[in-house]
Length: 376
Image (cartoon, rainbow, N blue to C red; front, side, top):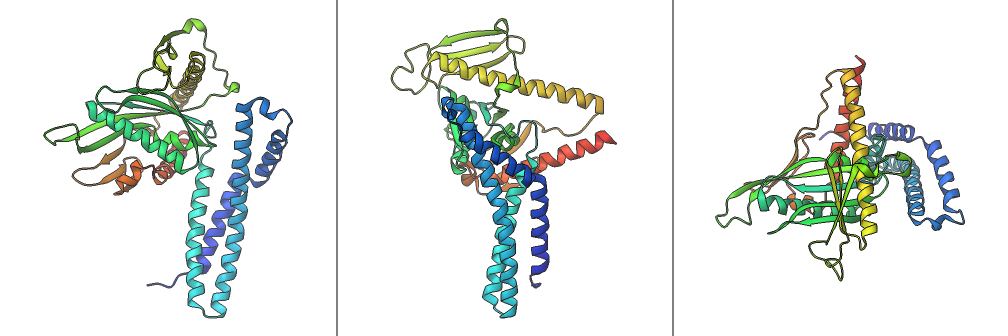
């Protein structure tokens, strides 16, 4: 086994740190923290709880980011000193400790590097995720519920706040669809790579003959709209229907017309909301999701125009982006990035950061290649 090259490893770590620090712009980050601290200390901040939550969340994220950068720099200096000490004293244990720490530093730098790749127009936003069952009958409805649990567990693992907005239950098992919101800095940038068609292959628990079943579910991710987005929706463009909520619920949930369905007539987009207690709250939440979807639609139309001007750029996601195979073998594989794991239960328990990070890197390469091709 070749001897570990400490000088090269430390040099690579320092170079990556410098690249990350440059991309994140430390001076800009410090200025942002100062501005947010001023906003956070304003006397009337909590007069608007929603805005206060955004300010404090962004401040916490920026401070954490700066702290991680400062810590990484210090750790590189410290491990370099540790290597020198181990060499001077010819101490194998000290050098082994230094090698292990270099591995940890590399992992932390890789995690921070992902942040630099989240530079899309809406990547900083909170995310609204909708999961819909597809082909596959009751198995597809059950699969949709498995995906819902997976994403909610992912949010919990990462300390992100997730809020259910709407759930439509299937008759036999699972769900027809569900919509939830994830409030965290860069939630949309991270979760947007999860959008697409997901496929499950397994022995169906609903088939009394124990046959293998393939089922599908669609995941849609949109950024949460903000007041500055200016998505105007005339009242004449929407139809609003109210009805009683369905499925499990507490007192009054299933006995009042609190659920809201909004249909956007020009596009045919339909949004339902039933998880809030009042019709007013559900209507406001439904309008926010409708605006988010119209925002994405507008963005896609603009991108399509640019693509037509630039020519045919191959940067499509494809219909099926990930397969979850539980029989005849255990494997979850992303068909875009090639990343795979045999730890299927861990994935369904929310351990999907590796898939998300691989997707972010893949998307960054697709965008870079498309930009180069359009410039050629």
